[in-house]
Length: 412
Image (cartoon, rainbow, N blue to C red):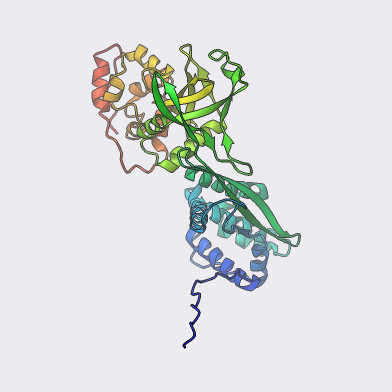
């Protein structure tokens, strides 16, 4: 009887690079970086000593590992690792007309260390300094370069977290190989939490709400709460902290009104807004939570207290008739609740099509109402696959018939 042959394991196992091979990979990346960002007639070449000096200041980002006991699949971990490395390759710093990614800044950081090493002669240092031109003015201390990398990790976990599905946290460990080798390695340990939901009674109807949970770096996910004393104008119950819940309706409205942002970008906007929480309590028992984009106010999450819970009900664009800015717009030019959606000034994409200089008095009207920041977003970078077209010429004529005269657009 023939013996059964054992199946060969054809799965490729990536072996860790030894120092020699690692140096070759580093050398290739450094030359590619210099050719791309600093094209010169004569290509710069490094001596073995210079390469070794730069190599010991390299920054390594191994794939993340899961927290012990967590039920996270290998494919999910690989996907998270891929997203982190993708984020590290995205341009994040504009200097003198040139964009740099986090990885490229890491290579420039190594270049600086090599250039300023005591073993380098003054003549060679000047040659290295001149080769990269104005990039010498980029500030890259050890703390600054570490923060660029941490920001990429933070953006990744906030982008992939969703209160209706999964929420991730990331434990980050900065590790230096040894005192003689200051290569910086970022060890990452992923922890995942799952969405929690319940049904509450709103105006006599049972509604599904989700526990408001936010991802964090070097800590467990944050289970959102509001301190009761901060909303004592509208809450007289006995709880010290009120758990935050959110309706799907609020998330859908946010997606609809901030229509240039994909789901990952929306998740990050929510995270940033609650990281620097600003809210106002209205006399009608509602709370407006400020939502900002590029430090510009774009709207509010609207919440109220139901059965000792702080429930986020919907999202209002900043021009909406029931916001402070919307009320001011109505006072200035008579724009009512139905006019705002009709003229499409209740969504982000409208203001990406508008240059404030083309409509100076119209933009001045929005500035007076407190929502002039919307015109400042015109120069920001967005992925505008579904750009809305707004009839601002028609809006100008409409307002003209009302209480404020608005001039013709300025021809460029």
